[in-house]
Amino acid sequence: QVQLVESGGGLVQAGGSLRLSCAASGLVFSIRATAWYRQAPGKQRELVAGITREGTTNYADSVKGRFTISRDNAKNTVYLQMDSLKPEDTAVYSCHVDTYPLLQYWGQGTQVTVSS
Image 1: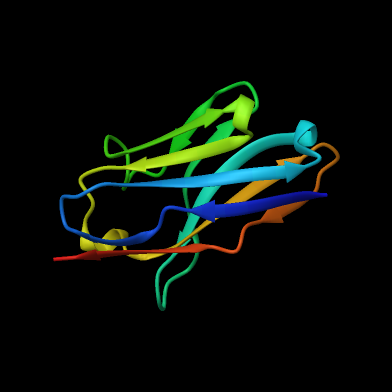
Image 2: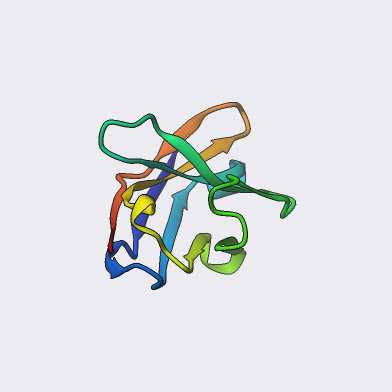
């Protein structure tokens, strides 16, 4: 199994920055890809950004140019640097991993609130 612990959420003013962390433990060698999702009240969960084991990244159009996903393999941690935050970025952000074999794990989520 893989355990995920997120941190770094909080309250920030529009235009500000936050960095989310997703620390993995357990069978980390089995992780194929890591992604950040978010869900705002009354809305469906959406993919924000992802990074594969090989380092390939992808982003939702709404965050391109503002968010950066990266990882520190030595710490088994994936980061989501969020800059130029907007009120519409307010949501619960959750870390997700796919593994070999094809299993999925979720973190507990962290609240990000952007005030206008």
